[in-house]
Amino acid sequence: MIQKIWFTLVWVYIKFGLFFYTKKITVLGKENIPKKGAVLFAVNHPNGLVDPLYVTTTNRRQNHFLVRAASFKNPIVKKILESLYLMPIYRIRDGIQQLANNQEIFEKCFNILKKGETLMIFPEGSHDKKRTIRPLSKGFTRIVFGALEKYKDLEITVIPVGVTYQHPSHFPSKVAINYGKPITTRAIFEENSLAKSINILKKKVTDQLKIVSVHISDDENYETILQKLNDAQVDFTAVDNVNEMIKNNSFPSKKNSKKNYLKPLLYLIILNSIIPFLLWKKASQKIDEIEFIDTFRFSINLFICSLFYCLQAHILSIYYGNTIGFFYLTISALLILIYVKTAPTNAKKHIDFVEASK
Image (cartoon, rainbow, N blue to C red; front, side, top):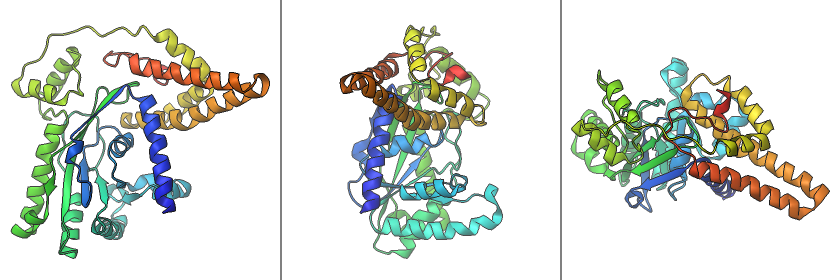
């Protein structure tokens, strides 16, 4: 019970943070999520650890997560992640001897599904900002069919989830979370051999992921198609429309990028957040994967900026009274909200609260 309360409090805090961090979050297909029973969310993975945050805060099911084992190296971080229902999954790059640990994790997953709870998995196996659905690993099918084998009366519903960003790693950005059609798995498992069941489920999930997220085939035409879409300044979060353009090879004419007339407001926000900004500049130099930019940026904004603004408001309250402190905190939040919700997201070159250091 204590863990559930803790998870709910963190869930609310992160959801609140994402509201201030993201220009617009479009959620489609929520009606496809069963209100009860075992569910496995199979999610594409374009943008690091913010992907599960967007998914888990746009549905009311309390999710358990499988994330790469490297995130659990620090003992303190490990405790925090485990308290939020995150579990490590080991890959061949973590060392062959580590793969044996996955069996214990799989057993935990079986029990989670048996209790009618939910599990979130990224079956592509790694993150990549390319706008394409990559081949899926069979790890998620091992969990599904392993649980069905162990518990004969269990039904597991797989929901493919597409996460599509207007511009991954840019701030502010728009994002679409698209929940696909439910895939029931008991009949697949009982009517086919295990090898065939795995292929059927992987194909069903892959086919849907190509519909619920923007998918450009990863072939010799990929860069050409992507360039046409970028030149046309399309709204990538309008997933159906963009996929239709790709399918028909019909693209809008080239458009100029919108100018960001809110730069003065941006610089005012940076000045008001100078210490978190300088911390970000230092931290950003150590990020070697573009897919982790949003992860670190959001974390700094959520925790350090919140603390910094509250501290400044408290100092003002001491010297000038609570009314002034509250007024400062309110204005600071409003300035960020105005910028995030109104700044253009389709500019090719973006200067923002954290990218100004790039």
